[in-house]
Every structure is written in structure tokens, then in C-alpha cells.
Length: 259
Ligand SMILES: [Zn+2]
Ligand SMILES: [Zn+2]
Image (tube, rainbow, N blue to C red):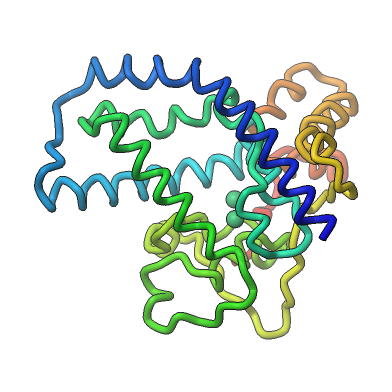
């Protein structure tokens, strides 16, 4: 109950801050649209299919970057902060997603010729679809698991276990995870542990929204070099911890996840 109320509080903050920051984002999107390569007509089935596949493709990379680039993770980590997995998690979204600039990863769609409103509507449907996959109550969807992002896939996306973390980034489709090698499947002897590797430990929406920012400041304080402090912004979230415990950088460190 506390978790669900916290998610609701986070959702109100996210809606408000994102509505305000859209004022900065929308002009940038329309500037790119004005300088586009061409126009892809959307009055044919092929146009719609291309729009859907294109949006799914860029959503995959946007989501992957939101996990692996610390600056983008500042906002997206809020969605992963719940330690239970239920529908309320679906609207536990970051407060500064527009301000971190991660939206630029969708701009190629507008540059290639998809109208900003069409891309916005497709992304809206993508997020709407993702509401129902935040549940433990739906079993396997059989052959649907090959193509669609399902509760079974998305459960693992919310796991903090090293066996599952940073996998299953798809929106409506799971095919890009299969294609780019980021698909995880549940292991019989590894029960899913939900949440963040460094948990929030609070139901206060403000504390939840600020959590990763506080961790970033704390990590920066423990790095003596300014170069490394700057590096924190684009390196993966666990980079500073690995630096602290091993003293070696990502250039020589072993990979985080063994698939
Ligand atoms: Zn995610
Ligand atoms: Zn989710």
C-alpha cells in the first residue's frame, strides 16, 4: 500500500515537471522537423508500419541509454525504484526526463520524415501498452513471448539481480532485445529481486525522485579527480562503485553482466 501511494505521489510530480519542461523540448523537436530529409506519408499501411517499427527501434535505444548512461539514469531510475512489482510501478516515472535531454534520441525519427505529433502519439500508445506488463499475475503468453514485450519479460527488466539487470529494454516489441543481445530469460534457481541495487528505503515521493541525484553527488564527493567526476555523468551507474572497490576503470574492468 505504501509503495502504491508513493508511486502515485511520484506520478503527480512527474506529470507536473514534465508538462513544464515540454515547453523547452517541443520547439527543439519542431526545429528538427522543419529541417527534415523528407516526409513519410502516413496515409498508407506501410507508412504506419514504418512509424511503429521506427518508434520501437528508437525506444529500445532510448531505454538502453537511460540505463547505461548515468545522466539519463538520474531520471529513469525512479521507474525502477519500486521493490514490489505491480501496476502502480507503471506510473512511477522520473521527474526530469525532458530536462536530461534523453528525448534527442527520438529526433532522428522527425529528421527522417515522421511528423512530431505522429511520433508523440505512437510513443503515447507504447507507454499505454506498457501499463499492463507491470504485473506478476499474467503467466506466459506462449508464442507471443517471441515478438511482444510481456509481463514475463518486463519482470526481469525490473530485477536488480546481476543475472537479469540491464536486459529486456523493449517497449511493445521484444524483437530488438533478441536482435541486439539484451534478452534475459528467467532462471529456475534465481528468484527475481525487484528494485535498485542501491535502494531508496523511503515512501516519500520527493526522496524517491531525488535519490539518484543524491547518490551522484555522493559518488562525486568520493572521487578526487575532476575528470572522473565529469566522467560519472556518462559512464554506467555502477562505474564509480567499481572504481571504489577495485581501483580499476571501465577500460580494464570485467563486464557487469554475464548473460
Ligand atoms: Zn528501464
Ligand atoms: Zn517498467
